[in-house]
Length: 302
Image 1 (cartoon, one colour):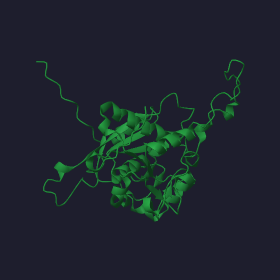
Image 2 (cartoon, rainbow, N blue to C red; image 1 turned 30 degrees about the vertical axis):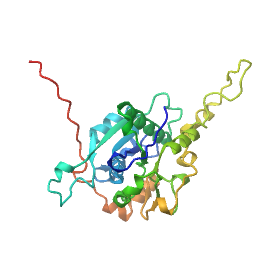
Image 3 (cartoon, rainbow, N blue to C red; image 1 turned 90 degrees about the vertical axis):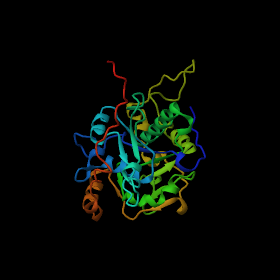
Image 4 (spheres, rainbow, N blue to C red; image 1 turned 180 degrees about the horizontal axis):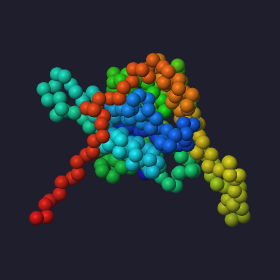
């Protein structure tokens, strides 16, 4: 199945938010997943990434994670968050009637990819593919036009994205940069991508080794196994190994002065001691709280 990017404008544009949570464990060493570490009281990394997608103007949010951690995450976050731009408009005569819910979908890393290519970058690929395939089963008119990637292991003030929504939801890719660096330098900064970039990123992942060498026997079948430490090298790919040759420029990027990488304990301590950490609080309940969509009503049997 191929990706298709429609050239549409207005409300029919579908920006799908991708929150990648798979990948190899970091050095936090806690009993819970690394992305459940708090960045403020009662406010976790994954919740901050989801709220960033909401500020970016995403119509849907797709969280890619391991199947055994999905129930814990859904129990805390629920089925949707509110669009912060539409959650409370003071001049609107009916503000609550015009609120926009952003549905959250939980995508498990496929078992065939676990322990083989399940790096953090692969969660981006698998989340985007699931968003496309799921939308395609409903209608060709709701294919995602672009994908916005929000990493749990990088934080900046997401409210800065509000004035850039139009650029983010446009045919041209958009990047968050810090000191001129992006994911191309291994930084967990957010960015958008489309059909062509998806194919390129997936091709980079597929350059990883498998179980066997490239040597073929007389029947044209590979039978020589690689050493265990050399098998499935894509598991250990960094962001800089996959997200290469990005087309970022001053016109399609936002330079943020306060950005903190949270991908290690030392970097996490650096964030906790920063001025930004003192300002961050959990969003109010009218933006984010555990909520579920109501069940579809059925006819009474009596």
